[in-house]
Length: 270
Image (cartoon, rainbow, N blue to C red):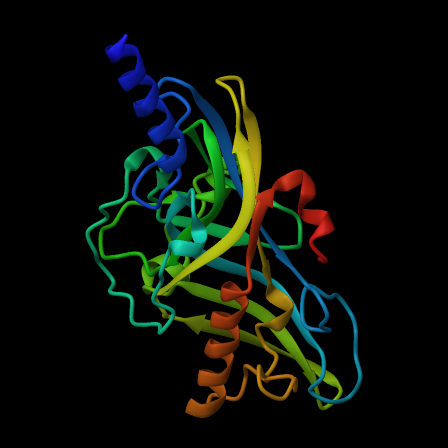
């Protein structure tokens, strides 16, 4: 009888303390579910974004044609509010990944962005349980480092071995055009920041048959908008101050990202 009572206390303790930062939200170590990761770059509350013909005669229209973003170390958290991140832009190029591999998608993932449609880029079996967000990095690809490519994942060919984001060690590259002096002036903006963020969003993997899409949602419409004044930033102006402002705007956009089931992302205001 004493043994049964002790076992009961142990089970209650595991239920009460199982969802902590240091423990995965497992209902059973042999009870995983399959998750496909997607990323959505929306265009919320801004004229900056994927456009094909707007014009106004001044630098207040920016057309984004495509972009490459490199994500890595996507870690599913059971208590995202307890997780700390370094948003200073000083995350080192190389670091030891001590995360539990069962809940971490290591990457790096070279993601090709061409519109506001969700892009699938990875699939993994995760432990069953409830997660409240993810911690992730935007990182340059290291010399000789292997990476996953979203085009290849989606059956569009091997893709990006010659991409600027990979061959020249950039974490983000954006191609587009700025409308000024009555013409569209093309630009290529390159960002070499290594950044670390967390995004919130609750979802549950409840059984071995779980097969869900989890989407990260970021607002690309803010990338070329001054985060302090709301003015449009012209990426063809190469002054240090202007380039720094754009990099700050990009950093803020990731910090404001959201995470959740892909079938819900259209309700996130994009």
